[in-house]
Length: 312
Image (cartoon, rainbow, N blue to C red; front, top):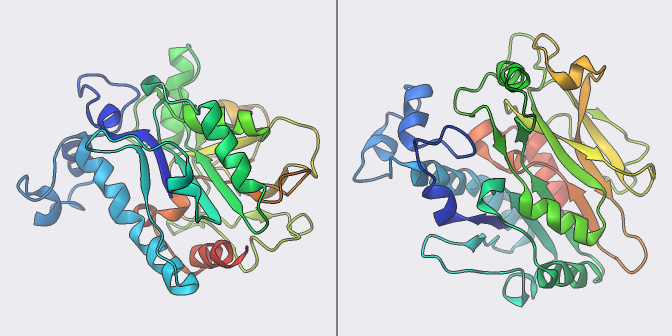
C-alpha cells in the first residue's frame, strides 16, 4: 500500500483555510459526536486533535484489510508514504516495488500540495507491470467543487451532505499524472452519494458487468461500503474492451447533482484495464475507501479483498 501524499503538507494545512484540506480531529469529533468521544480519540495526550489526528484514522482503518490479506496470503502488507511524518521521501522505486506483486496506490493527496508522478515513478511502475502475475490498484479520491461557479459547488455539497467535506476538495494529482504516464484512460470526477437499501445504511447493490469480468474480480461481490462522496471513474477512451467498467454504483437521485441532471443514474465504481502489449499486469481503478473500515465492512467487501489477494 502506497499513500502518495506528503503527510506534513496535509497535516500542516492552515485550519483557517476552508477548502482543500482534511478535517481536524476536533472537527471530526464535533460533527460525528459522540462517535469519537472515547479517551483513545478525544484525549489530547493519547491522540492528536489537529489534522494529523484525522490522518492517523486512515492507518487504523486499513488494519482489517491488512490482517485479512496476511491471513489469506501469508504475507504482511506494508504501508508506505511518499513523504512521511518525519519528512522522509520514498519514491516508487525498488524499496517499494522490488518484491511486490500487488501494488495499491491511494490518491489521497490534495491537488494544492502539488504531488506529481516523476518519469522515474512511471517507469518503475511500468517495469512492475511487465512482470507476469502483477496488479496495480490505483485510486484517486473524489474531485468535489471543480467548477468556479459557487452555486454549482453548493449543489454538489448539498448532494453528498457531509459537513466534514469543504465546498472544494480536489484530490488525485499524483495518481492522475501516473495514470497519464502509464496510458490508463481514466479520470476521477465529482463526489457522488450512493443510493442505499431503504431503511439501512448499506449502499445499493452494484450493477456488475459479469460478462466483462472474465478474470473474476467481482466474483461473489454484491456491494462496496457506503461513503458519502465517491468519485466517478470516467473512461476517456472508446475502447470498451481495453478499459472495462466492471461495476457501477447507483446514485442517490433524491439529491440533485450536475452529473445526474445530465441524465446519469450510476457512476463507475470499478474499472479494469486488462494486460495489453508488453504490460503483463492488471490495472484496477477503485477508490481507497473500499479498503477502510471507517466506512463499514461486510462479507461482500471482504470477498472483494480476498479476490484481490488471491488473483495474481
